[in-house]
Length: 377
Image (cartoon, rainbow, N blue to C red; front, side, top):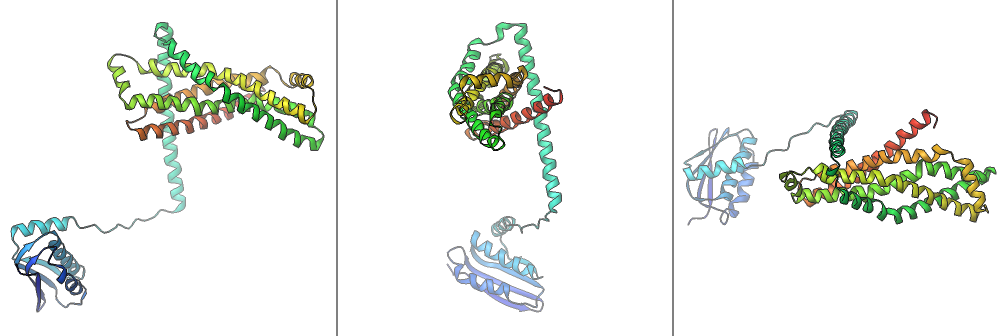
């Protein structure tokens, strides 16, 4: 079979390229460089004619070389066309031409201020949609709770106690340790600063107010969101991935009553109890520091606790706890139901659940703090 070759003739305004032989991948290497130079060389012609009647074999590589050369001529203002093209070669050339990479489009970058406003608007839209979906999910939980009140037999007592144990009793060691240490740190830092003004005796007031009103509950809620909220998402998400929730619906069982309600109720019950224990451990941690660094006797410390704390100092934290528990439970369960069916989705929803729970807990704490301050509590 004849090797690939070509001849170039110029007839007036027409540049004629006559291709001959085997234009396949194994034979066109010898002519590739010449064709590149031909496509780059200046030409006075207005039309380029590719005569391929004597081409005995043409594969994808040969068709691409021809198309590349024709495209180069067209880029210089010439009109390119083929002569003597057989049907099988035409199909191949048309396909190569269709698959040619498009030129990158020039993207006009928006002004920085416009881009910032655009991102803020998109974030607001996403936040609004999340709020709407969250309120709808809360409504579904309330409906399920109303059905349980009308027929208490619908409430699954064993899962409720199980989740109370997992979210409450199993979290006690971690809550006690962390709140004890944080109480000690607050007392130590407060004493070192107040001592500069000769007011180190008010360290007890600082520990009492800060821990009972804010830190005890906030720290406990964050621990519960990291432990129990993520566990709820992972458990329900795994069931969603294995299509167990669809099987429950097929059997006529309501996932809201079977999965969501026991977990949410368990958190609402145990978080105030954990907050109570956290407050006590934080005060004990502060008392240890007051005893060791300030030389304050334990009985004196207890007396100053009684003087610095009123009912609402302790009650504010306990009053906020059920609302934070509700938020953590709803976000954890809804994120689990949002799993799409892959292990990657379970991990992403679990991470999102923890982040959103902690964020909402801090927002609720700030809202309640402003409210209680406004009403004088």
